[in-house]
Length: 163
Picture (cartoon, rainbow, N blue to C red):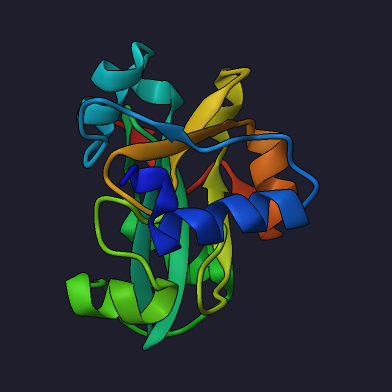
């Protein structure tokens, strides 16, 4: 069975279609579990890979979509989301509970829950960016503008810094 038949991957493809996106999930021969792996598998620049990072701010799950060649500035998340409390990186169980996806395949669309999303302005450097699609061997091509539209995310200059 192709991983494109995986329930999580089908959920992402349905979310893309429901959002009016023409993007189609791509199955990769090699893993896309990390940004470096994804860039190598696709044959694209590291910066064009979207890292879907889940945190909690004061217990509230939030998602940061960060360019693969940049680091998330976790200290900026409370201000960006107008939340108070400690910032914690979500562990595997918390990520699965908040998104319905396992780490290595966390997609910014098709989540089982909803949470606020912030998008690194650094993704706008690329005409096409690639986001995880529910499985470590699946991604979908999109743009920073389409990600913003589909996630209702905020574009931010503050949440990422050069790696």
